[in-house]
Structures are given as C-alpha cells and as structure tokens.
Amino acid sequence: MNEDAFQKLSIYVHDARKPLNRISMQAELIKMALNGDVPAEKALVALDKIIASTKDCSATLSELTAEFSNTHVE
Amino acid sequence: MLTVLLVDDDAEFTEVACTIIEFLGHEVLTASSLEEARDWLKKETFDHILLDFMLPDGSGAHLFDELNSLPKSPRVTLITGHPSVKSVIKGLCGPNIDYLVKPIQREDLEQVLSGKPQGKSKKEDSIKQHFGLLIGESAPMKELYKLIERVSRTSANVMLLGESGVGKEVVAAAIHRASESEGPYVATNCGAFSKELIGSELFGHEKGAFTGAVGRKEGVFEQAEGGTLFLDEITEMSIDMQPNLLRVLENKVVIRVGGTKTTPVNCRVVSATNRTMEEIAQSKVLREDIYFRLAVFPITIPPLRDRKEDIPLLARRFMEEFNAENGSQFTWKDSQLDTLQAYDWPGNVRELRHFVHRAAIMSDPEKSAIELPKTIESPFAQKQSTSPSLQAGRTIEDVEKELIYATLEKVSGNKTTAAEMLGISTKTLYNRLHAYGDLSKDEQ
Image 1 (cartoon, rainbow over the protein chains, first blue to last red):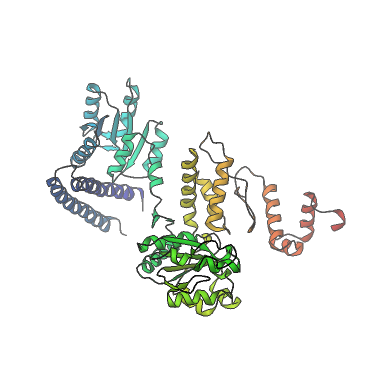
Image 2: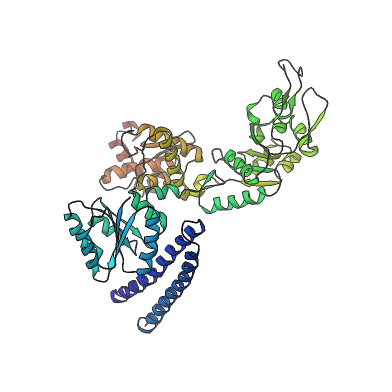
C-alpha cells in the first residue's frame, strides 16, 4: 500500500471510529438509565441512536470497500 | 467539582459526554472547534480540558501553547482516535497532559477527571480473578475454568494432578466456591499425619479410643458435611489406610476410631497429588479402586511454563498484594516482567510469588522501582540469570565468555563437545578458559 492509499484508509478508519465512540457513550447512558441515574426515556432515545450509529459505521465501511476496490486494487 | 471544557466537533458525542460529566458532579461547557474553544478560554477559567485531536479548524495540539500561557493552566486530556497518536503526544506534552483513545467509556472520563494517572488503576482492575481466586487468561487456564465450571454442577469427586506449586489447593477452593454448596470447605494434608493419626484425622475418634484421646473428635469427613473435603497429597497416604478410605467413599458413612456407630457423610472429595497418572499407575502408591473412586473427574493443572503469558498478570497481582499489606507503591517495569516471563519457574506459581515478595523486600520502600535480584535462585533448577544476555553496553568478550560457560554447562563440562557446538577448535576453547583463569596449566 502506498502512502496516499494509507492516508485515505486512515480517514475512513477515523470516520468509522466516530460512530463507535457514539455507541460507547450511548451505551453508558443506557446503563445510567437502568440504574435510575437519568430518566428511563433517555435510554430509548439512546438505543435508537445506537442503531443509527451502527448504520453510519456500516455505510463508512461500505464506502471504504468501494473506494479501495475501484482505485487501489491492481 | 471541576469546571470542564469539552472540545469536540461530534455533537452527539458531546451531548452524551456532558450528561455523564454532569452526573459525575462537574460543570461542563462545550466547543466544537478551536475557535470556539479559544473564545471560552478568554471568558472562563477551566480546571480540565477534554480536547479532540482532530478538529475542523486544526489539531487540538494547537491549543497547547495558549493553555500553557494561561495564569492557571488546566489539566488537558487529548481524545484521539488512534492509539499510535499517544506516543507522539507523550513526546509533545508535559506531565499535565494525558490522553484517551476512542471509543470512550464512562470510567475513562471518571478516571481522567479524578486526576488519577491514566491507565494505571485500569490495568490493576483488569486482573480478573476467576471464581474469585484464579488468575490467568491463557488458553490452558481457560480450559481449566471450563472444567471447573462443568464439574461444579455435579457432585463428582475430583482428582487434581499437577506439579508442586501450580495451585492445587486454590483450584480445590475454586471448585468449592463454584459449586455454591451449603457446607464448608475443609482441607487436610494426607502426607502430614502419621499412620496412627490419619485415621483419627479423617474419620474422627471416640473418647478413650487411644492414649491421648481425651474427648470425642469429629473427622474431616464429618466437618465437611454438605461441602467440600480437600485431601492434599493423597498419594502419600499409607497403602494400609486406603481400604478404610475406600469404605467411606463407597458407603458414604464413617465409623469413628474406637467407635461402632456409623455416621452418614455427604461431601464432595477433591484430592490432589503432584504425581502424574502414569506414576500413580506404576508406583502403586494408590490402590486402583481408590483411584477410580477419587478421580471420577481428573483435572490436570498446567505448569506455569506452559502458560507464560499469565506470568505478568500473576507478578502484578502478587506485587499489589505486597503493596496493600505493606503500604508500598512498587510497580513493575515492562522489561522486568519480560525477564520474569522468560524464566521457566520449575517451582511454578508458588516460586513466582516467593520471588516477587523477595524482590519487593529487597527494594527501597521509599521508591516505586523494584530491584530484581540478579539471579532467580531455585533449588529446583539451575541458576538462571535475570539480566538479559544480549544487551547494548556489554562487550563481545563478555557475551562470548557467558556463551562458553553456558555451553559447557549444557554438555556437562565435555570440552570437545562444547567446542564442536560453539564452532571453534578444542584448542581455542582451552585457550579461552585459560584466559579466564579457569584452567590449570596441566589441563591444557
């Protein structure tokens, strides 16, 4: 892999990590809701956001695959 | 309570992080770019800045200089997406700055905001004790946990096989704990009692059964009612006594020494020996019928050399125990843990524990550095040097000398074979030994 490709890959990885970070924090929020530390309805919202983030992450990974199958496979 | 500034361009993340930070009892403000952060810094004083490394208008690192020029410079935690950035950051920043790697958890935030050194306590917490007793994440240990889990659901008798020091008694206690039985855990060592006394220890005695039997005594089988009886060194029990044990195991009743009445007993028997199954079969130290009664479920505990990846975990745990008992703050260096990991530990976990405590006692209690003894001495093995043989700063002569002696030791001093192995002539070998002053002239 050349440097350009690696740079590109790093950007995708960074983008894919972003929703993972959101998922982790939303999961913490759900734990707090289950403990009664924050209102229970926040857990429901958080779960929806987790689902949305998994889709974001998946979309980024699909983009990455598409990008690399088009330009970097020789 | 701290005043925290969270600088991150991901709005969803900052929203949840704020909820959590506020719940932790701190006040928090947010900025989504370097520019916004700079604005806040002009208006407010912060105790702690949580700073994303990659922001829309530049790297979070650009804020360092400004932060340092503030009258009261806050603590800074950089949030990075990639673990490799941490080494760069370490070089860049002073002691006032640490880092978190995404994805972040609540405990990460708690840790950095409490001001405790990052990573340290997390590392300590990560030493999991399986069944509250056993340490190790290696494949052989995971297999062992699986066996313990399975056997604990039954009432089968277990025989533990393993070298001295592997922790047979700890495994026995783990089986007891996993069984969640109502009765107690009673341990006894069959090798510790004379032929005459072992009967009384196991089955109890009635008053006046023998000289000195001034009162009635319950044996360990009765004491362990409804629980677990651990019989250590079972193969050291005299062969004459074994039929009595067999009767108890088969009939589930004991008759106290000097008594006539039978008492029903109900406990799981976990026995242990440091002999292998082959040795047991060949040496006839255990009657075959007893073996099959005791070893309904035999478990072999792996020696420490077969699970070397667990050595750092164990060493850290033992040092934590020492620190807790003595109020010291010793911490291992990675290179020291590597040295411990390279050794074979013929005395197994017991030897490692002993060595760790010895090292701690020898170290300066005022410092956190551990002084590792130069050699790991064990009566069970030849001395092994703890200083890595290939280290910059040593001379070739020095290393050559060590290699020559190591080779000679390996071939029991046979100089011709040693020279062959070393790829030098016997004459050269003699010359070297002579130069070391280790050879009298007439030997040449």
